[in-house]
Length: 362
Image (tube, rainbow, N blue to C red):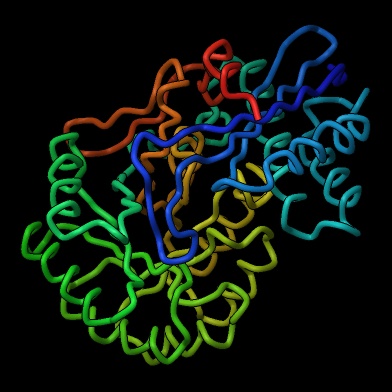
């Protein structure tokens, strides 16, 4: 069916608790940008992306003013062709950044529509592998005291999580080491624990941190330095002592290709809402598989559970406490083994409470 309309909206989601990391400081809200693609038969697919507080209306504008007219009248089920049309339509001002966010929201909506028309959950449409996906609780807790950190962790354990990630990147590396030691002591020796530096460190500091933190048997050290420094990541991977996860700030397939080819990443971490959508996410996952690497995720867990469920080289699904659950009809849940289960509802299965969102329109 041809595309009849694309509606873009922008909302500001207040966080239940002020969150903190080493790059963005204190985070009081995030922005949700939605794209609803309707075909001429009246069927609708939903896509969305987000920011951590700024730039949301620029993304909404790209969808409404640029991508909507670009795709009007095109066949909705030719998703790969439509992705190329969007990519090259915004290429001169894009190649990443807000353009990749906008493309992602529309691409996700197109895949949702395609799966709904097929009567299948998205993970099955994508040749599903296993609906049960390992999951971890992603804390945004750099400025928490140790007591607050452990209290948050205790709450996450009570919610059924079997893996935890915490923030590092405080002013002194000794503080980070002490906090990770306290967490490891609290969780015990075999519990999966990850740490995330949010790009905070220069390369030499990141190497020292990787070596010092190795004593605590971490699954990975995430984003040890800026994503623009490929050579620096290569040094950290070679000279450090902890596996590296990175990619949440990559917005194209090519960035992942360069890091994988250089041996600069152990856990590629694409975010479907910021790397161009399902179409490009799958290419990244298959590229990782061809290089014998597991894939993890960042953000939008209600969407990305489908993607990890569709591939054989999945790792952990990140589950964030961004407060979006308050506006979703069927939030993602964990099973008794701490795994997230991809739903069987047609499409990606996410349905927003639009009336509630109306009160926080951006």
